Image (cartoon, rainbow, N blue to C red):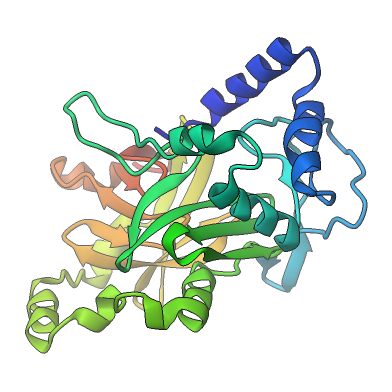
Length: 298
């Protein structure tokens, strides 16, 4: 399962076992041999890294700079380029670093206690996308956004890097269509028949303005120690976050809303009667039922 803490601990294990720091280990054993000469891991707060772009997030007047204040590594903190990441992508095919056995182990998917197999493997998501086997992952820190999608059987993929937090989640999919569209199955939306669309439209939930207003408020996740604020604007439920900016939450079924890729879906507790808007739970590719509790509820 996805766990930042686990990979930070793993980085510490690598450092202790090798006798050198994790950034040094990666430079000597991974980045150097692959020719990734423009890739480094930030090892201390405020470290100066040559030619690094600033990161930005939108505000009411345009954009503001957002600083990466973390010096933790193992689960992040790596600065790279598209060209260098293309070299890493190619390593999945060649096994130049690690060897074929390690590449194979990296793709072993997790299994839950009930035997269900999940898409998350060792630091990557493994599965199928539009009829093709795929290895992929996304990342975000401060205002930086990254996406990595590799099709082993097509011997190619797409890497996107951005230094603005509101770049949107559609860009990787759009680029995939340009380069690989003819070799991929139709996107799910293209496969929908008129009957399917009508059934979905008939079963969709259309909350009233009063219902949306009941959900507006400030919600806090103790696990993430972060806050999302919900408000109603133009008849729609909107979310906002200090790092992600403002985004729309679209109703999909009763008490459930879908947001951008970084957010996922939010399901409000519908069993509490008048207190239904006290909490919601978020699920996406990284988390399942992550609890947010309203802090301004009276």
